[in-house]
Image (tube, rainbow, N blue to C red):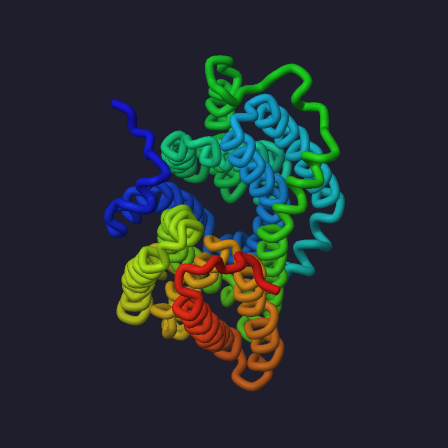
Length: 458
C-alpha cells in the first residue's frame, strides 16, 4: 500500500491530523538529536568531572559555527533538490547531490584546518580558562578531525528529507543516538578515555550511519543517486545553494556570537563552573526547543500550501494548533525547570556547587519559557508563507537587538544573575514583537479576502 500523499490533501484533510502526521517524524528525529547531546554531557559529567562539563560548554560556539557552515550547504542544496524533483528534472537533482558532497568536503576541510591551527587561541576567546582548556582542546581535536564526516552526514540527511524520505532521515538520526549510547559509556568508563572518548563516540556513530547513507545514494534504482561527473562543481548550483543557505548560516553564526558572550560573562561573574551550569541549562532547554522545531517542520508545508491556495481559514487553523501544541511543550519545560531544577542538574553531575549554580540559573532562564513556543512558531510561520524577511528579522532581532545588549549591560548590574535574566528579557521582548507582526498580518488577510497577497516583504 502506498504511503505517498497527494498535495491536495494539505488543503482538505483535518488540520489536527495533518499536523501530527507531518510533525511526528521530525519530532522523533529532533528529540533523538537532543538526547544525543544530553547523553554526552551526562557521561562526561559523571565519568570525567564537573570541570569537563564546563570544558564541553566552551565548545558550544565551535559546534554552532560548524553547524552554520554545514547549513550553508545543506539547507540550500536540499531546497534546490526538492525544486528540481518537483520539476521532474532528475539529472539536475543528481548533479545537486554530487555538488553538495563536494562543497561539504571543501568547506568542512577548510574549517577543520583553520580551526586546528588556531585551536587554543579560539578556545580561549570562547571563554576557556586554564582549568577548562585541556578538556575543551581534547574534545574539539577529535570533533574537528571528524568534521567532514559530520558535514556530509548532516547534508545527506537534509537531502533525504527534501527528496521525500523523512523516515530514512529519522532512522539515520536515531541510529547515531543508539550507537552513541553504546559507545559513550564503553569509551569513557570502560577504556578510561575521558572526554576524548565521548568525542570519538560522536564521530564514529556518525561515520557508521554515513556509510549507510552513501550506500543508499549509490543505489542506481533510486531516482536520485551518485553519478559520474556529478561531483564536479557547477557555478550556478554553488551560487544558488549558498544564496539560499545564507539565511540559516546567519542565524547559526548569530547564535555563535551569543554563546561566546554568555560564556565570557559567566566566566567573569561566576567562574568556570558557571559555564558548566549554562551547559546543563542549554542541554535541557534544547530538548524542548527541538520538539517545537519538529512541530514547525510539520506546520511548514501545510501553512505554505493553504496560503498559496488562499485557504486562509486553514492557515489560521494550522497556526493556532501549532502555537497551542508548542506552548504545551514549552510550558512543560517551564514546570520542570521551576519545580525540579536541582533534580535535573543532578542527572549531569554530583558536584554540589555546580548543581547549585545550574538550579539557580535554570529557574531564571525558564521563567518565561511558555512564551518561547509562540515566538518560534510565529517566526517559522512567516517563513512558511514566503515572508522570509520577517522570519529572519524575528530570529536575528531576538539575539542581536535584544539579547546581546542585555548580556553586555546586565552582568555589570546584577553579576551572574544579569547573564541569566538577559535571556527571559530578550524572549519577552521578541514575543511581543512577534505578536504585533502576527496581528498585523492577519488583519491583512481579512482585508484582502481572497485576493492574492504578495508573499514577500517590501
